[in-house]
Image 1 (cartoon, rainbow, N blue to C red):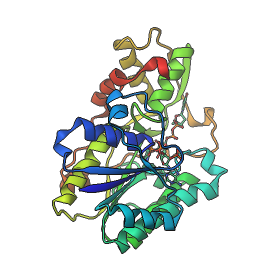
Image 2: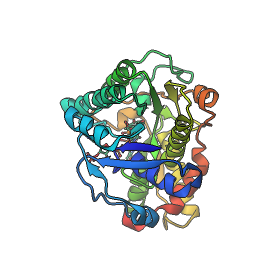
Image 3: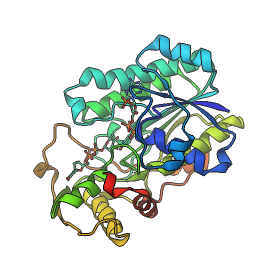
Length: 319
Ligand SMILES: NC(=O)C1=CN([C@@H]2O[C@H](COP(=O)(O)OP(=O)(O)OC[C@H]3O[C@@H](n4cnc5c(N)ncnc54)[C@H](OP(=O)(O)O)[C@@H]3O)[C@@H](O)[C@H]2O)C=CC1
Ligand SMILES: Cc1cn([C@H]2C[C@H](O)[C@@H](COP(=O)(O)OP(=O)(O)O[C@H]3O[C@@H](C)C(=O)[C@@H](O)[C@H]3O)O2)c(=O)[nH]c1=O
């Protein structure tokens, strides 16, 4: 089945391509890829990915005519949208840009998918919640974003739900991987240069290895190819909650065990108030992942095990 991977140069987009190479079981899936700015995006982390790479097309999802023409030309049977404006702090001052990509871009894809009678898998975020819950968020829990990124992603969800009946929205959280920019790579980079790191310990969430999310998406695509039509919104994230401090500790410890860090910095637990940033973050954004297990037979991600893989694959000297 031909699938259009939107956002091929992003963290998750690259993980999807790597997962397809690594897992023969998904050999029925054929990707046609698009990127926004750079068809020659760097992918130094994986030789196999670089070697296998076919050049992606360049396309801006905020351009409705371009989206429509792409689908008419390439005739994909499924759209996988991993593209988004993900700069949480910059979104506070680039409000139009965040909404253009995360709302208008999502709407264009949903409208064209619906017109062409093809399904769409779209990725959303734990940041659609305000973080005031004390037990894991269910899919039906009311959304109340507390920053521009979260609000723009929520509008993206609503437009997908309204414009395209054949949709799967996957809300995920705290993505980490060997690819793109993410907290795990930032922490290793900082740990190489500093004796002490100060990390917030009062935001609780579930880290998610983007490689596992990629496999979950490919599993869904393969099921859709076989005729499965279990549309809706589903949560997918790590199976154990922690704080950013807890995640940083796990990353640094594993890097030390694998001798990828020669000296280990002291990690100081701090509060959000001691680390002021432009965007507010939800203090608690644990997602309940039971529905995706019931509907799609997908287990929550074992991020603690995946950190071993992530560190093993990481070229720390290149960070
Ligand atoms: N990263 C995280 O921790 C989390 C991410 N998510 C969601 O998961 C998805 C994947 O995230 P991730 O891979 O980390 O994000 P990245 O920021 O790594 O990748 C996003 C991609 O979207 C592309 N893009 C941006 N604007 C446009 C546009 N106008 N047209 C086409 N493509 C565009 C970017 O291309 P370019 O750089 O060329 O502009 C980039 O390749 C997103 O929907 C995100 O909201 C959810 C929870 C956590
Ligand atoms: C680098 C660093 C961060 N922090 C804190 C800041 C922040 O509260 C928290 C996470 O930092 P980041 O800015 O890397 O991550 P952030 O942009 O908040 O991550 C979010 O991204 C979007 C796209 C999502 O959808 C979310 O699920 C989530 O993953 O860690 C420290 O306390 N110390 C540090 O040295």
